[in-house]
Amino acid sequence: MVLIISVEDVIKKFKDLHQRLEVSPSSSSYEKLILHSCALLEVHVALDIVDEMCEAGLTLSTKALHSILQICDDTSEYNLVHRIFSTIRHYNLESDDETFRSMIDFFLKMKDIEGAYKMLDDLEELNLKLTPGMYNAIMAECFQEKNISDGVRVLEHMQCADVKPDSQTFSCLISNSETKEDIAKYYEELKQSGIVATKQIFMALINAYAACGQLEKAKKVILDPLIPPKSLNQIKGFLVSVLASHGQLSGALVIYDKIKQSGHKLEAKEITSLIEHTHSEGELDRLLLLLEELDDTDYWNDACCRIILYCIWNKHLSSAVELCNLLMDKFQSDEQVMEFLFDKVFSLIEESSHLHTFLELLSEIKDKLGLLPSQKRHDSLLRVTATDLHDSDF
Image 1 (tube, rainbow, N blue to C red):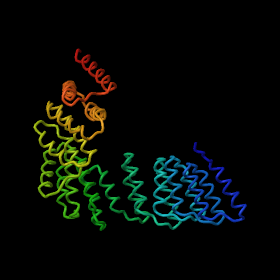
Image 2 (image 1 turned 120 degrees about the vertical axis):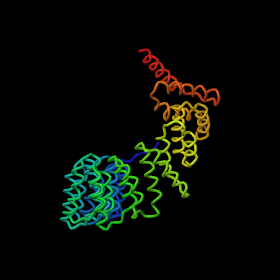
Image 3 (image 1 turned 30 degrees about the horizontal axis):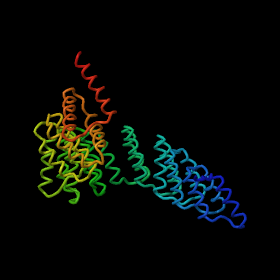
Image 4 (image 1 turned 90 degrees about the vertical axis):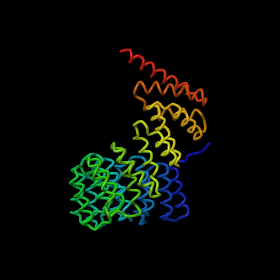
């Protein structure tokens, strides 16, 4: 039996010990007590100890402050940001960019964008350096909430505070541009500012143009002479994935073939994207070759199920059985294989004809591989089949 001592008991023993020894607690002793309180998720107690420590003329380390912020985040007590910031100001505690980034995140998690701006204004009054990252966090939150106008307005706030945007600022603006004119405008501003365009900028350009339906412009991004040579193939791979997801599979495959001819490989998620968006008949051989390129087990398993689904759509039962056999080598038990098949294949089957093919596949893998669904899966399959039969009668 493990005896759990309350934080109040620990504090009492802490004070009694120092009184008996007739010594004042040191900064390190206080911080150990603060960290212990954080470990017990007693963040209010930890902040009380900070007050006591600072009143005694001792200084809290940035590391301990970050531990408190982390526990506030873990326990979703974001409203404590007001008390923490007040404590930092009152005792002039050491802090850094990470400290204020975390606190801005708390305001944003409370959907209090004005509170985040107010804190930035207070930091400016304290002559503390404001960074692009602080504003980028606000911008990203605005765009995530689909508040495009406020997201764009962050740039104006940066200019008023004399904070220069960085590559991440422009990446965020480009990614959330709604017209090809805005995309071009922000990219031109980036170039005029002298900021080095990172691979994230070119990926943002590709994504933004594709989202605007400007797929030809998206394709031309890889011709930009400012692309860092070491990032070119990665950016091309990203373009392959974007084109595939926007119905431009033939164009994606052309670029994929060129990447292979140059002796490079796509990343696993990009290969998976090609597999996921291949639906037309006659592509099975290519899909199997793509599967061979995957080394990562999780991506391989997912891609294998995608191809099994393709086989069901196009009635390639024998190939589906072979893939199920390969899948068996990746799992510790037959039961895990069947659970994976139901989660990744059966859950995506919608049409009645495909359901019948899936039932045929289950019969085949039962006879040839000895794979059987669990009773729970078997019952759910019966219910779906009964519903399908009932619907077909009307």
